[in-house]
Length: 304
Image (cartoon, rainbow, N blue to C red):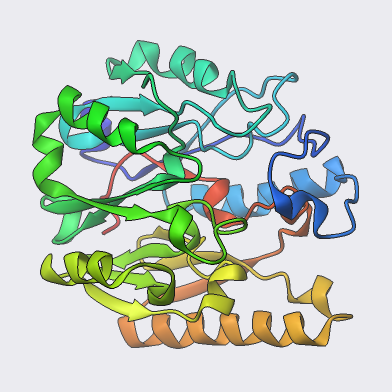
């Protein structure tokens, strides 16, 4: 696998064959009419994203388990490529236990070192920020306080001491929207080497200064746009994949306008950076509180 990781951009997805929002494990699940997920529609929306992504890169697909309602949201692991190590999630969210075991079985034959933390950790709270192309240099920004315990980061540093000098931590519990923006990917997105989108209002001045001292260039994002998922994007070479839910918000003029302006801002940012935004429908996943970055995990950074 390591040879392929050096030659091809590789992502991981999981088909939503058994998707459900029966277990309400986040507040978004009760914010949109609490409606049941249309599986056929969800599969169609998922396949549109998968089809586009797989036309640009290799996409590995995890076999779905009928007992895991949220498995299509690939938050069950993160891959630390420099150390050839998979870190499995240790879920806080109810009903997600077992997803990490499916990932472990899937990757056991690839020769990765696989670690299961003894403390709560959910992979969207670990963001690798490439500072030069191909992520030959990078920093890690980590979230804690809501779905990930601070003790996880202490444990990870003991397991991989080299991580400490690369690490900046963000207390996700301190932002006023922590109930909804509970993962780091809800407020931060690495869009180019050394450039991130960040909802600056939702982190402390000390945390912001740490990021700036790391020579990371920040494109500030309004909190309203973070709530609409502008940072829940995926980069694949020159494409930025995002969910456009404006159609379902037409009856709520306020949210509709925010969604439209979120899309416009992402388009403007991409134009300035020489990138191409691609928007997909994803309202079935919003019923679980999920957006684009929930559906895709990356194994390497050849697209940076």
